[in-house]
Image 1 (tube, rainbow, N blue to C red):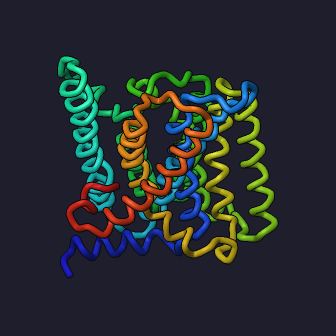
Image 2 (cartoon, rainbow, N blue to C red):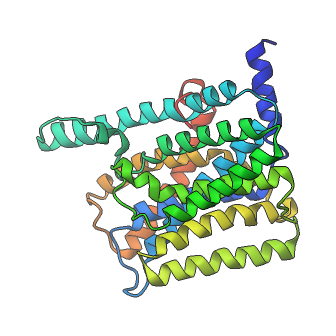
Amino acid sequence: MGERDVEEVKASLARGPRSRGIDACRVLAAVLVIWIHATSAVEFHPSIRHTTLGYLGVPFFTAAAMLFAVRQSYGGATATTLVVARIRRILVPFAVWAAVYWLITDLVFGRLMNGVPLEFDWREAMKGFTWHLWFLPFVFAVGVGAVLVARASVRSVTLTAAFVLAALFGAGALLGVPAGSDLDIRRWPYELPVALVSLAMALALRRGWLQIPRRVWTAGVLWLGVISLAVYALLEGQPPARRAGQAAGVLMLIAALATPDRCVPMWLARLGSLGFSVYVVHVVILQVLLKLLERDGVLTPAEALAVFSATVVLSFAVSWAGKRTPLVRRVLP
């Protein structure tokens, strides 16, 4: 076994014991992302902003990425190993899927089918069909930041405490930043409070300053909090519901950590490894379904629910098959 293999084994061991709750929540987060993309053009009830449910998905993925980055960094793997692993798992798929989306949307749908002049600028790389690819470089950047912070604080409790306080103060300072456009990098500061709070929490958990009991009643109270924030977001819309969605996403990670494994079916937990893959492939499936219906996002509520359900099933099926195909597996996050 080479030195690189040894480092990757260390990184794997540093993840700690698997949490079925986190794996199951990856499934839920991916489904919520699909929900916002599949139903954004319909209205189920004038007083309910149903798309705000989708705002829980990305914050959960961000919070989980920070937790795993800290766990791995405290496990003995070098920062270089962890950064390279993130390049392979996140940046390479980002580049591939950005090219795929551009070819389909601009070349096939735009130029060949509708005669739209072919052009490209850097923002197109984060577009896809629904401007959602921005999340991959964002989670790579905050994940690398978490790795560097955690590695620097491994041997110093004082430095860890300083990083925790700095992260919390930084998150507080950024709470007033508006959401902005998905295609604009100025959107990132709006998302940073989630990453910073999650980094502080992950460091505190690692040092033992914060403990989350894995008990049914604890999990029940936390899940009630998640549901309450989600309901608030549904009723209030945006703003300020996006912040409520972010809080619910972080709280969902905490609830997942508190949920005993016996409460989560094994089959559901196993689907969790497909979460990021579903994130990137579902828009292709969604657009194919819309084209088959000869609709450009204009659906009745019943049609939207049917398209959403079909997209969920097909996205997980395609991701599962892709993960078992050597060539495709390399370009799935």
